[in-house]
Length: 168
Image (cartoon, rainbow, N blue to C red; front, side):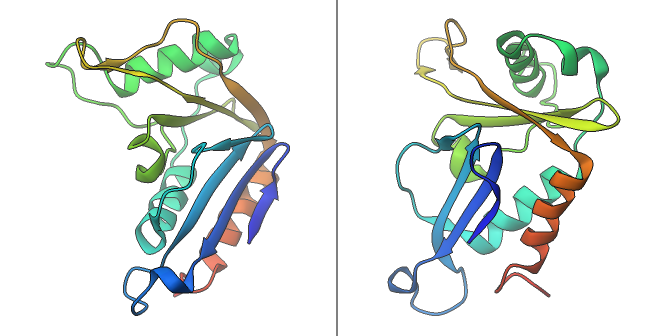
């Protein structure tokens, strides 16, 4: 099932029967498209019951920050990454803008969202992890971005809420 427009922002969900002994975890595919680019770039098994709930919660919890919303894409992504994962270990992680399902972040794909009060800006990138620094490389990264109206985002969230077997 595709929720949204893959050339703008979409969530692709597909439970795979062969990957499930029963309906406990509902294993399948979870892909997120931002401006026509698919994240993650390779197939990984998603525990859909968990991932869909987390994604829905993250999309519902997006924050407004007009300054971050107006920055150039790469600069906005880097600032949000540093807010989310500060270099200083004494500063707590701040996940206000992080909408990455665990499947994506575990594979170094990060999707951030920020609102301006009316619209939502989605920024995504696949990063390289640097073992020496214990952080992802943020130089010369390619950032995909798109903009959604509140109605467009709400349609995707509604689809996540109603997607079987996740509907309660």
